[in-house]
Image 1 (tube, rainbow over the protein chains, first blue to last red):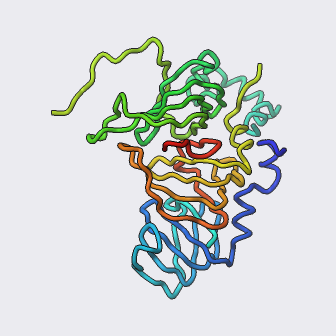
Image 2: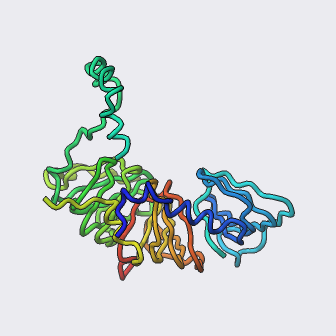
Image 3: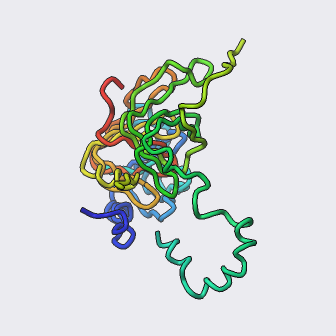
Length: 86
Length: 119
Length: 87
């Protein structure tokens, strides 16, 4: 069993996850409820996120498309609720 | 944990000793002002940032005031966004984040003396 | 004396069902994969809910397949074992 203390020495679970999903399609939801789907171009420890070919919906994809972005979209880390694998 | 060990680093020890008296008042204390040990296994009322109210039995805690509650019950709000006394939901064995903790007090030894009702 | 440390409780929940309640009306259920020092949390196959703070009734927002990294910033409570029946 890994203890809590082990975690800070090893690569933390979240850091591992972030490096795993770079370049992959993701969902990102902000606290406002806006949901972005796109390819994860980059992400940092503050959860600042850059997506390419992103689409924008409210809450889920069943709610109609609000926007499509052809170039990069930058999302501020403080506003990010989660990032998830598609 | 690593923050604590740096406290005992010998280079800082000297200046710390000098300023000990002053620092006692100026800097935030490392130790909690409330010893939660005396509330262990007692029922407490915990208020959280965002307005949630949770009642439960303290089973554990840490320095950051993360709590472990057992038999936790969350009080729901009424239509006026006020915490209601009787509308609850069961959470059970729960970890509460210390970062969003607003207040904590034992249930025994306190009583409701006045409930404000909106017109 | 046996102390129960909150982060140890979360650590023991890894690979188990978990129910996570945010500061807002939003909740997540799924399998806990891991967490870090800030209690950012990774959940496998998460279901996202909004739960009324007046009725306690939950509505499903969406289901996630794969892992989800939930920011620890707005996490209020973590319940090992997942959502209580009746909620």
